Length: 158
Image (cartoon, rainbow, N blue to C red):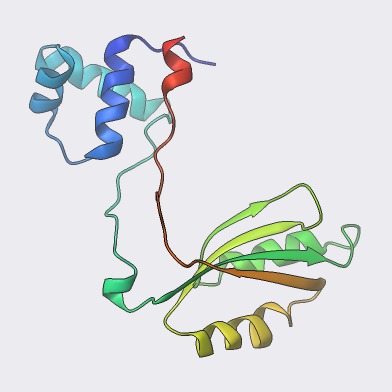
C-alpha cells in the first residue's frame, strides 16, 4: 500500500467533497503553497489514486424514481456464463454499478429506472432472459440515507 502524508490525506478528503476546488484554494486548505500542492495533485492523478472527477446527479430530478439492488445467481460458472453476463451488464444503461459477490448470489447490481413498470420490463424481459441467469432477487430502495459514498481515509492516518 502506498504511503500518504497528512497533506495528501487532507487533499484526498477535500477533493472527495469538492472535486472542483481550485488548486490555489486546496493548497491554502491543506497548508501548502500552490506549486507543491499542484505537484502532489498531479502525482496522485498519475499514480491512479485520483481516477477522475464527475458531477453527482440527482436521479429523481432527472426522472429515475425507482432505485433497486438486484442480486443475480447464474446456473453455472464453467461455461463462460460469467463473462457473457458481465459483457451484457456493461451494455445496460440502467445498471449504474455491478459487483461480483461471495455467498448465495454471484452478482449485485445497482439499477435505476423511471418506474416500477420499467423495472418489471428490465427484470423480466432483459435480465432474466440473459443466457446463464438462474434467478434474481430484487430489493427496492425506500430511502438513500448516505451515499453515494466517499472512500474512507481513516486507515491512512494510522
